[in-house]
Amino acid sequence: MKSDRFAEVVVIGAGAAGLFAAVRAAERGKRVLVLEKNTKPGVKILMSGGTRCNLTQATDRRALGDAFPRDQSRFLRSPLAALGPEELVDMFHREGLRTKVESTGKVFPTSDRALDVQRTLLTMLQRSGAKLELSTPVFTIDRSADGFVVDTPGGAIHASQVIIATGGQSYPGCGTTGDGYVWAKSLGHSIVPPRPALVPLKTKNEWTHELSGLTLPDIRVSIVSPDEKKPLASDRGSVLFTHVGLSGPVVLDVSREVTARPRAAGLLAECDLLPDVRREHLVEQLQSLNGRRQVRGLVETWLPNRLVESLFHESNIPLERTAAELSKAERLRLVESLKATRLELTGTLGFAKAEVTAGGVALDEVNSSNLESKCSPGLFLVGEVLDIDGPIGGYNFQAAFSTGWLAGESV
Ligand code: FDA
Image 1 (cartoon, rainbow, N blue to C red):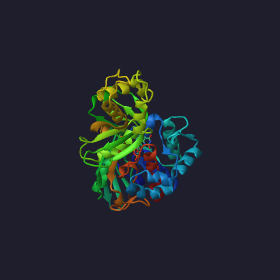
Image 2 (image 1 turned 30 degrees about the horizontal axis):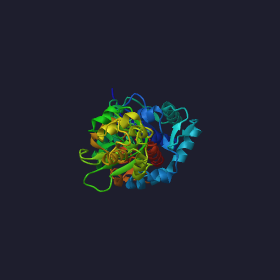
Image 3 (image 1 turned 90 degrees about the vertical axis):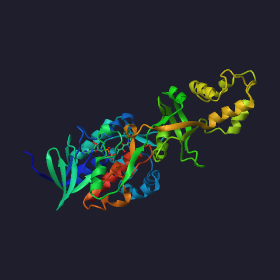
């Protein structure tokens, strides 16, 4: 027979945010129960960073916050003051998890094993005294006279305070199906429409699909709308060609501007394949090439042959062109393709392949100094369920850890 149970604090979701919230609240003497629908905790931690878990960025709290859009950065000030990136890394070190910093500033466990991060969190959770119940999907949360009633397959759980840490709705197979938005809405919150962010882009140009698997370590990608003078977003870094378009860190970072538009059709990804070389310099190099030499030979000293072949083909220049044969118009077309190849976007891979969800519980309805709801006292919201989405590089985990920690400190 199902019987009602009581917990002082119920945390829903055992991801980065929920686990940190539970640890901190239980350390402070609260009776904490964590409910997780999956059969294991921290599923996204395990799959993150290519199963290496990029847990934060090696920077200070100010720079970390500044990497988020302005309203989010303001909201994150108190959570980051409670637990900044340096404190987070120190905390992991004290728990025996050694970390390393890569050239991009990304912080990983020295072991390159996300499993070690998950295990460290579970050790902290166990020591704190918080209880974890797996395979327990929460169906609904309702207000009661003295708090909340949380409905689960095992019956109702009464709680004085509830922390929603259910994440967003990307990679729904990981348990993140947007449940938190529905409950927050029923408890009075506005939801900024969720949309995929950090998501691979689809291109119309079939030649890019044929380059699937090719990585360019350092190019500039700008998202351009024919109706607007300035690019919507522009960033520089590594890009991967896929069988449907483009991926890689720099593409994921600019993708939020694509999903912010009602339709991707009409938008272009403009690629500067040689961002350190000016157009005039390329023209000079091409003009000073020995007339008998094939032009492709020079371009292949800068870029992989497969890409060079495609660029020549797309620019309508025969591959065997020698420097003497290259007309002025061909030279200009070639330089244009190197500095501003324009790819037509048709969409993104959507929530199924988005690393994070942009949108979520509106930030102005949550008190950033303690993460408590302004609509429903006793309710706390942490991590990706909030309208928070940062760039690639450990920023999203840091936001989840910091908001979770501050809520745990505040319940
Ligand atoms: P998270 O999504 O981690 O946890 C929410 C939990 O709530 C889930 O376990 C879910 O099952 C549970 N839940 C949902 N509904 C429930 C219900 N009804 N009842 C019970 N439980 C419920 N970030 C970064 O900083 N560095 C990185 O390297 C990566 N890499 C990366 C790779 C991939 C493939 C993805 C998909 C994402 C990343 N991220 C990342 C993003 C990062 O994983 C993400 O921002 C955090 O996991 C968010 O943490 P939360 O705790 O808020 O949610």
